[in-house]
Length: 402
Length: 75
Ligand SMILES: Cc1cc2nc3c(=O)[nH]c(=O)nc-3n(C[C@H](O)[C@H](O)[C@H](O)COP(=O)(O)OP(=O)(O)OC[C@H]3O[C@@H](n4cnc5c(N)ncnc54)[C@H](O)[C@@H]3O)c2cc1C
Image 1 (cartoon, chains in turn brown, purple):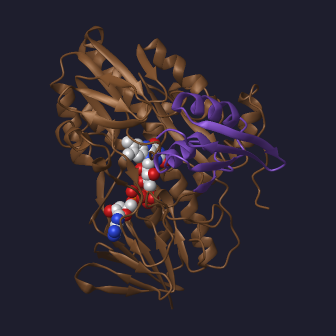
Image 2 (cartoon, each protein chain N blue to C red):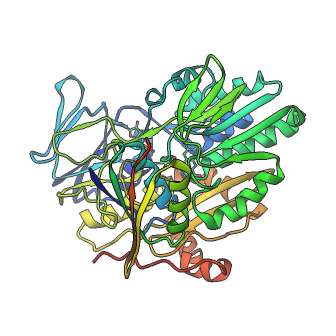
Image 3 (cartoon, rainbow over the protein chains, first blue to last red):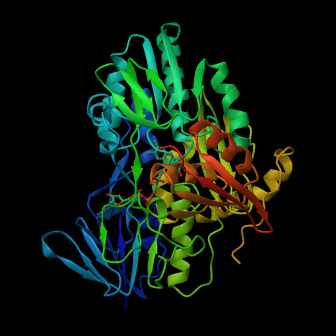
């Protein structure tokens, strides 16, 4: 039997493992953790104090017959098909998939480590999300500087979802009139994709959130409680809520396959690591020109499972990020390589759909929801939705490879 | 050093993210060549260059992409 080795038991790794024919393939998943976390819920832990259990053992999420090993992969030699774990353990393979997600790196911005350790954040892990909830509960008014510390961020809507949920919390606590919320971003506007920004920025303004564009964080001056940007601007804070820089993998590769930030260079249609036909990078860890989200990891994993099993398939760049607008409304960021993001209006129904997704997430990992997803993705086809909603949006040049 | 940033097809977060990322990893004197398909990139790159003190050397429309050449003057 051919051996498939999957590094990372996150959304991408688990879906991929569960999509392979176990009569044909010997499948092993290696993860440094025993538990898989539902990361989108970090928002509700940090801004609503949710105590819902959001992790499950990876071994229980895999279909029977798939081997799970808890180990940290340190090094990969793609030319010799060798993977090195801890304690001199080595793994071999016929097909390898690297699906190790991103890693937060607060150390690259001077002063940020203090904020990371003392205030917490809502992106890195469960512990830091709980820390942020505690920081919020001790906050009685003042300046909140809210933003991300690098242009790359997984789940692009999540920074704005966070600030809108923060506003909801402050309103409910009666702290709104005593607080100034500033949202800083390295982009020219609050949301990088313009059609979605046309929906989001007016809502932020209406809720009294000040947007500071072109503020690319350079350092945190903890002594004087100031943020400084590469552009040379400053921002005062009493409470800083900052998503740490999002980097790729720390695994060492013997071959030159990573970019400067640790993301793996892969083909945007097949997820094959550049230069290899037996190695793939799936999900947040790759450098594809699309959003880093669970939905993308899911769709990429399905394509790679097909390719390994000899079925022609190709990733379309499809994104479908749920976007919580606070106060019980949500929308979705929908687009693909060929079609711009849809100007999709928020509604209560879409909020209900986002919350339902959180409930059925564990079933989606096993593939039980695939027929429903196939229907949904066709129903929300970006081309069709663009014709309906993006009247003012110019078409894009074709991005087909030459 | 000349660096090619291929952002073709990026609908979200879009080419401006790739440009900001490349800028973080650049040095004064570097040239960033950005490939994109999103029409909004032209206005965004110009606003970005003005705000960050860098220079747009050329914006070229090709049949399958928009090519923007930027010289890094400030870092
Ligand atoms: C606040 C927030 C909100 C979000 N909201 C949404 C949303 O609404 N919708 C959506 O689709 N996505 C959302 N996301 C993004 C989503 O969670 C990620 O995109 C998704 O988890 C990516 O899956 P992945 O498999 O690539 O990586 P991950 O799920 O991060 O999994 C990576 C795995 O690799 C393991 N690993 C890492 N390094 C090693 C190593 N060296 N050796 C062995 N194992 C290793 C890790 O332990 C981890 O289990 C959100 C994220 C956040 C933080």
